[in-house]
Length: 151
Image (cartoon, rainbow, N blue to C red):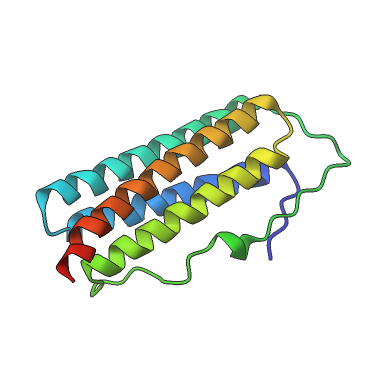
């Protein structure tokens, strides 16, 4: 269980999650079977890098404040995906894992938006949540097209 004691803790956690997403999608791009999904996974890796850059910029500018009496408590395990990517992963497994990761990222950013101490942080987290939701939808559409049509 991880307790966030400051906005900086939240931002560090979010940056780490975004880097993990970059690595995940870059790996999927290397394993993808068709050019369209190579492009999609590569694009998502770039978008996640953009999310990370936004968070790092916010952290470096210090444009947030937090009172001493606020202690944030998010349960880290609520946002972790219980399946790790592996080299023998099928395309279907990769899509399922991607959907789960995006759903969890959406939940994380929505929860962070609710406890963010400034309007700027709230807006940033809602914006990131919406982007993660769009990513999940793209994977759901691919899953429907690739997996469900095979049955």
